[in-house]
Amino acid sequence: MLMFSGTVVATRFAVRELDATFIALGRALVAAVLAACVLAAWRAPWPTGEQWRRIALVSAGVVVGFPWLITLALRTMPAAHGAVIVGLLPMATSVLAVIRGGERPSPAFWVASAAGLIGILVFASTRGAHGLGQADLLALAAVVLAGIGYCEGGLLAREMPAAHVICWALVLAAPLLALPTAWTLVRTGAHAGAVAWLCFGYVSVLSMFLGFFAFYRGMAEAGIARVSQIQLAQPVCSLVWSGLLLGERIDAATALTALFVVGCVLITSKTRVRVTYAVPEAP
Image 1 (cartoon, rainbow, N blue to C red):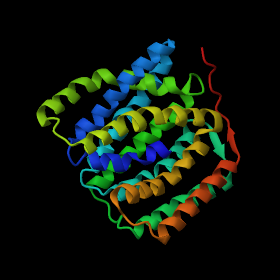
Image 2 (tube, rainbow, N blue to C red):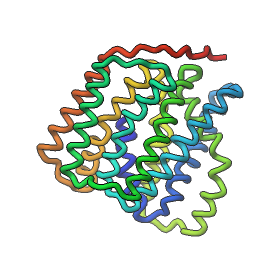
Image 3 (cartoon, one colour):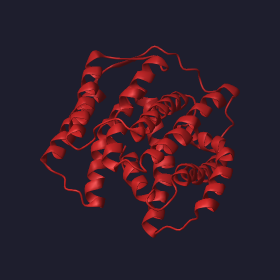
Image 4 (cartoon, rainbow, N blue to C red):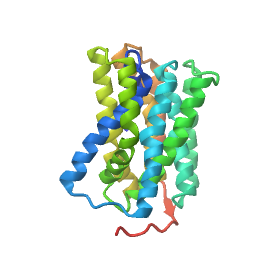
């Protein structure tokens, strides 16, 4: 969650000087190169035919769909606004965990997660996150796709090492990303300052690659719905990063919201989640 929390701020920095499509697709391509090295070093076994289909869903959701749509949205959307919309992701992932993963969270789980979500939205309403424009629709679509990728990746992490899930998803998407990334780079150029490239490196290595190692493993061990709720704290953390990196003032309301959301996360982590979906054994 801490790695993911810097994504919106880093993307907002990078998109000021680099093309949005290049950032969205290029970061996945960089991560794919790292993923191929990891798979080769670990001599990872090839996924089965059915696993490839599900890995394709992960690729569509978190490798291509979410990065591309959220980057397009952040061309005109403030980082704080984008962080708040991304705050809807935990609830979307929990709903998908019920539909796809067969998880049955307790009523206390839903009450605590809803309270955390309401806290984020109330806080957002005092910070200028109003209305529903084109950028908002892009960000909401990104949330839906990310929820699908998170849920399917969490299920796959019960069958194979969590790191392999995101690595295979990146490698699968790489051939489709190479040509448009190269074309965009040639068309727009690579003229950007050190800060923009540093932020591009952040979203490539941490947001798109290493963050998923821990995230998918946590989902496999503790449950998709429960672990996804940790991301309720992500928008608040993103606002803290905005304060530290952009010089924005963190007032009492921000601090109180952070404490409230963290409290909701702690409650959801203690609630019972029953799993009724039988996950196939790893081959």
